[in-house]
Image (cartoon, rainbow, N blue to C red):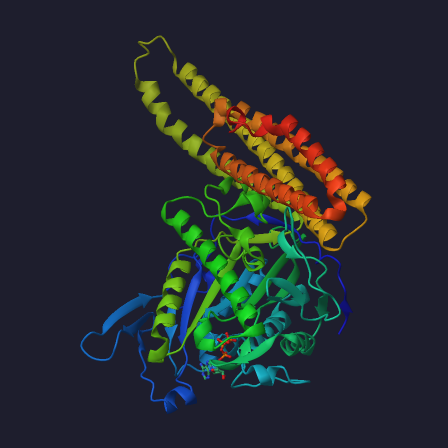
Length: 611
Ligand SMILES: Nc1ncnc2c1ncn2[C@@H]1O[C@H](COP(=O)(O)OP(=O)(O)OP(=O)(O)O)[C@@H](O)[C@H]1O
C-alpha cells in the first residue's frame, strides 16, 4: 500500500453545477421520488436474543416495500398506530446481500465514479443496527487481515469490492484515496494516524469544511482499501453500556476520493472528474437513563446527543426552507462557488463539527442516502417514533448534485453549456421571427413602420436585454467574490480567536497576548472593510437588480451576525484576562485600546449602514 501523509487533503477540483441529475444517479430502484432529495431507507433489525428472552413485543411492521407501521401506547385498547412512507423499508428478514442490492448504494457508487459527491449515513438509536448495516460485525471487521465475509459484510466492504469490480470494467484511469476519522466528544481524531492530537476543522472557498492534516492513503487494490477500513474500525472508540455491548461512542467518517480520467466522447480530450463517497456511521441517539451512563460514558453521551441535536436543527432548518420555497443551500459556507446566489435562510451548519463536515451531504451538492435503523421492540417504541420522524423530515431535504471537475474542465464545460443555451435561444428567436414575419408582412403599415423597422426594433431590444443580462451577471459575480472574501476573513478571524483562546489557556508571555490582540484587531478591521465594500456594492446594485441580490443580502446579514458573535467572544476573552491578577495592568491597556478602536469602527454596524 502506498501511503502519504497529506497536510491538506488533495487539492480538489472546482464544482460545476447541474440543475438536475438523471434519475438513475439517485439510484432509486424502489419508490423513487425526486432525484435531488435525500433518499431515506428504513431498516428494522430482528429482536435481539436478550429482547426475545425478556418477552418483548414487536411493534414495527413493514407494510409494503416503502411503508412502515409503528404501534404505540400500552398493549390493549389504547394502542395507536403511526405510518410512515420512505423510499424503501426493510424488515428483520432482510439479509445483508439484499440490503446492499436494494438500498440504492450501487447507484451512488456509480455517481461517485462519474464525478459526483455521494454520502451514505446511518442514523438511529443505540443498538439499532447502524454499524451492522454499514460495516457488518464490528468485532469481525476489526480483526487483523480481515478478508471479508460474504454473509455478514455490510455496505462498506461490499461497496469497496463493487468499486474495484467496476474499475476493472471501465476504460478510465482511476485513482483512489481514502481517509478515516471520528468525531469524539466534539473533537476530530484521525483513525489512521493515532499519533496526532485532535485535528481542526477548517473552511476554504471552493472546498467547504474539511479536516486539516488528515492522513490520506492511496489505495491501488481492494486489500489496500480493506486495510484502511479495518484499521479505522480497530481504532474507533467503542464502549459498553446497558443497550449495546459494542456501542460506537463516536461518529465515524470514511471518505473515498475517486479521481477518474476519461476521454470526452464528443472531441476525445481528457476529462478529469473528482468524485467521492462518504460513509458516516453516527453514534447512537440514546437516553442517559436507559444506557445507565456515568462518568466518561456520561460525557460521551452528552457530546453525542449535542451533536445529533445540531444535526436535527440543520435538518429542520433545511426542511423549513424547502417547504417555504426558499433555497436550501447556504452559500456563506458552501463548498460550491456556483451556489453562492442561493442563500435565503440561515442553516446552522457551524454549530457542531458533525454538521460542518456533513454540510455538503445535507442541502449541498452531494447525493445522499440516509439509512435509518430501528429496533422492533416495544420497549423502544418512543425512540423508534422519534427516529422515524427525524428520517421523515430528512427525506424532504433537497440537494443539488454537481459534477466535480478541475478548473480547466470547469471552464470548458461552462462554455459548452453557454453555447448550448445560446443555440436554444437562437432557435427560439428564429422561430419567433418566422411566426412574426408573415403577420407583419400582411399587416397594413398604417403606423408608418415597415416590417424591417419592426424586426430591427426587435433585434435592438434583444441586444439591449443581452447587455443587461451581462451586466447583472457581472454584478452577481462581483458580489459573490466579495462574499467569498468576507468568508475567508471570517475564517481567519475564527482561527485568530482560537489561537487567542489557546494563549489564555496556556499562560504565554504578556507581550505575546498584546501582539495577538493587535493582529486580531487588524484582521477584524480588514473584515469590516470587506463588509463595508460589500454593502456599497449591494447598495449600488439595488438600483438595477435588487431582487437578484436578495440572497447575498441575507448572507451578508449572517456574516455580520457572525462577526458580532466573534467580537463578543473577543471581549469576553479580554475580560477574562482582566480578571487574572497577574495580568491586570496589561489587560487594562488592551481593553482601553479595544474600546477606543471599537468606537471608531462602530459606525459600520450602525442601523443606517445596515443592508
Ligand atoms: N439486521 C440485523 N440482523 C442481525 N443482527 C443485527 C442486525 N442489526 C443489528 N444487529 C445486531 O444488533 C447488535 C447492535 O447492532 P449495532 O452495533 O450495529 O448497533 P448500532 O446502532 O451501531 O449501535 P451503537 O449506536 O450503540 O453503536 C449487534 O450485535 C448486531 O450484530
